[in-house]
Length: 237
Length: 237
Image 1: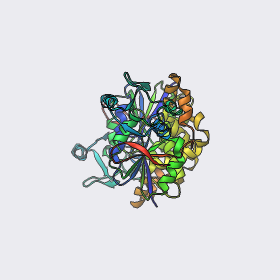
Image 2: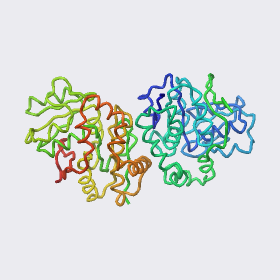
Image 3: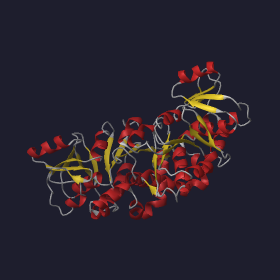
Image 4: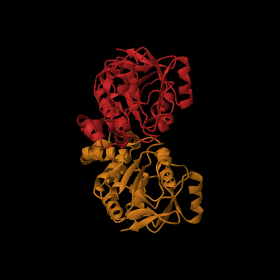
């Protein structure tokens, strides 16, 4: 019986054991959704950066650069944090350097795990199947919003807890709570999440199409993970 | 329309605005349940301490001293952290100095609020009525377990969110999630919480009577709060 736990914020990750676990990093609105979209549509690798400067500097090395702060494209960047920017295949074959408000911080703090995956609703089932093929305890690391709990990352955690119910039945408190919450609201995701503070923030930016994309289930078969050299790539599918 | 939010850990409280709010400190298993029991059964005041030494020193000033670490009575203390120790009135008229693993830390970090209340299921409705008589935004500060999310404090938060649905309908993400969770599991509290990690920890200590007490609803009319001199007292009822 494998265990599953949820860390609701990068500011709490030091209280969780990362070593030896399979860590799923989640930033539904929108970093991890964008990473999955970019790689599923042909971007060959993504280098995540916690700070803007290091990310911007990658342009000189031929990388496409994507930078977001507070929901908007950061000054001097070619792309922000919109998953739909990738779906027509414009950037297929390119390498991407990326920094976002919350997601890349969570990713940085997940290093040291046995495996780090990128979680998003559009490839949920593929990620579930991959996890079931491994024999590892799972830690879901929610990026949250500037360190605080957020609803969309937590509900994705609940979806994963429910889907892994048979292989990972040893649930700590956060996993128990989010599994229950998803069983209640999972059939009603878009409506329920429309109350979430970050969805409201994004609505103010006029990017409803991003929200729709981020809440679409199982559009892709690709599993995305961190590989040895610190890049994100499609690791299966 | 007043706002209500939940902070799931004292390690996240710096991300929430405390000033000007009504903060409810929650440590269901067992610090805040014990505080309510002690004061409802005649203890005249409780001085909370974050560390063992300062608390122990109060014995010389005539205080009854209660100290708990990791669920057990700390060495040299007269009492641990059991609410049922107070219910026969043995300690009526006494003043109490108290330190616990999680609860007193959360209390210390709540100072600066307009009002600090102590939350527990045995006086839930009294607390709700008191909050409704005030016109303040509410922040529920869960003590958690050594900084991590826990199920029982979060469910109490959900109970409060649901009960304050009309006066405090502006719910941030944590309040939304916990309100939903309580609507699903609130009728089934003892069974649901028997899966919680801290309940299991307490069961190992053979103190099921404490768990039963802590999950009893509305046994008391007393509202407990922090008063100006740093002591906890009955402030209404």
